Length: 361
Image (cartoon, rainbow, N blue to C red; front, top):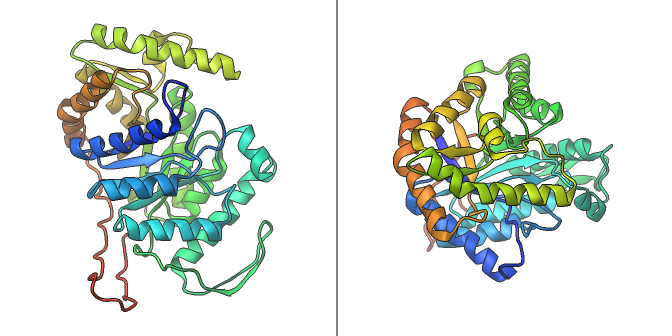
């Protein structure tokens, strides 16, 4: 199994935006130091999030790291001009040395729909259309195309040409079959959100993905699934973990009530039992992840990168414990395919336009 740490860059009054961005970059550096496989930055366009520009944040992280893969989580293609999104991410692909992977989706929240004039009626069609154009722009030197939501293209050329050809694109899945269908049709991996509800709705969407994957003629053995987990606090005993995490969980409940979000898990004990939150001793967390794996068959998982109210010392300690005692067992128990290897960059002294070798899709 492989492990990502992901942030939506939520922000509250305790720090300035500048300080909050600094925390995110420092956490990405820590994730690389501890041995995480990837670090992801989400995209939101409303309070309390500062993650409206993932390519900018990831570019800065790319300059501060050297090995860890960089993910979007998710890129909201339903809101973006796919040509501009292509230009941003092809540029980032070079700046990070081919360590980039995308997780795409239509996004969440009423505020972003207001900002971008995207409706619930057209958001999925926008996501599909934007992805299919983005996919062609990444692969083709010239593109002629027409659609519903942006001006047509005729022999359009986009620069820079990417370093990874093609890039691996995951499809974020939360509640709808549309993202599952799009992933299966194109032979792309699926990443289940798996953070807001009990296991079964997510499992049903993953089952549907595997069914549609086979329907489109792909080898069932090639289907690739990732899954999110809603929270993490590991300690030597479950009692210690629960006591430390209870204020974090309570703050989350308070925010959900204030924002009018339905409460699915009213107590921490209920969340530990029925949600994907990982709170307990290392063995308890291993057992829970393996229980989810038996239902999902996932090879990649993400955990929240942020402290979420934990002290810096406790935050670092739980990430260290995860990597020292939990991740090695899960890596051994759940074989996973390697991530794509970054392509070789041309020599800095060679200013010719290079012929770029094909990447892994």
